[in-house]
Amino acid sequence: MFYDYLKSQRQKLALLKDKIYRESDVRRALACERLDPHDLMALLSPSALPLLEEMAQKARQLTARNFGRTISLFAPLYLANYCANSCLYCSFNCRNSIDRRKLTLQEVELEGQAVADTGLGHLLLLTGESRQHSGPGYIQACVERLRPYFASLGIEVYPLAEEEYEHLYEGGVDSLTLFQETYDEKVYASVHPAGPKRDYRWRLDAPERACRAGIPGVNIGALLGLGEWREDAWATALHAQYLQKNYPDVEIALSVPRLRPHVGGFQPQASPVTDVALVQIILAYRLYLPRAGITLSTRESPHLRESLLPLGVTRMSAGSLTSVGGYASTAGSTQFEIADERSVPEIASMLSRSGYQPVYRDWINLKGIEGSVGR
Ligand code: SF4
Image 1 (tube, rainbow, N blue to C red):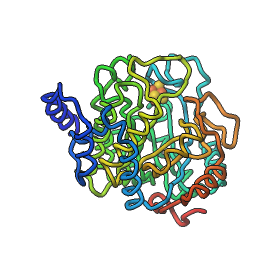
Image 2 (image 1 turned 120 degrees about the vertical axis):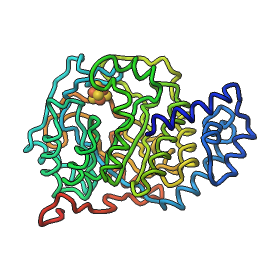
Image 3 (image 1 turned 60 degrees about the horizontal axis):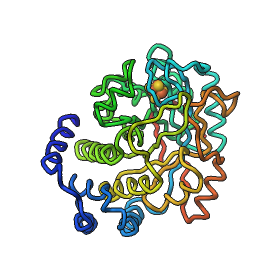
């Protein structure tokens, strides 16, 4: 399992604890086709800062070779915001007094129709982490309602057992997004003071359970800014590589979410992730994992999203809401503030102006559909 692999890689790195990565280490990593975990650390080190432009050039080439000039678009749909956890950095924390809501199946369909009317074919379904309020049966029922409207449906929900992932896959779910939040076990314990999410290992192994269950796309990430970002980015890339190696049929992708303002005002101890740091992380991911998708959400500002486009990004959310409901009905409390509020057509025309093809759907998943493949 990845836990043991990460531990062994950390031990190897600890043997070089006092090693300072120099510019020559970064140059060597830039010259290699296949990078090892030390090369990755060099690319994430302060010594890489003067070489960001060279890293960007190579990242552009690798992205064009593996993905062309295309950006796949998707929208999130929050089904419920009940949560059994008390993550210090999230508005849906069960100790926060916010409006709690769960969409009925009819509301789910109306919200889905409103997103589908924008032309988007990829939808990501999210819930707070509450088995009691949004159990696997409810998620499955939502998937059934939405299958006719979308080419592809992903989920971002609490970690499930392998059989539960199998069941959802058979019902039409074709991708999983699950963030470890931080790979640092001590920080993980401190920012998750209560609730089932305290189980670090159960969460860490969930992407692998989804791969074993046959889900074709798995997207992982750390919430950058919770722990030391260099270490979290390093561990995330190792995790993605481990999954790619062991499950070659699964499309592995990474997200680069940064902490955003939310209810509660939690301030992490770790150093903040500046815009330059975010650029460095994306470049290091692209150089280390040339075939992995990289997702950039509306957490980032329009200007920054456009600047980051050529560096390796392959997937973007568009026209997003982080409230339960809101596409077709009144919006409830939001999980976090978004920074890019542009509509789907606005994002699409920005992409076209920048020389990229906005992709509304790049494949159709026929699982879970009876009779028609929808729109
Ligand atoms: S991050 Fe997820 S698990 Fe934590 S409080 Fe928010 S919704 Fe719940």
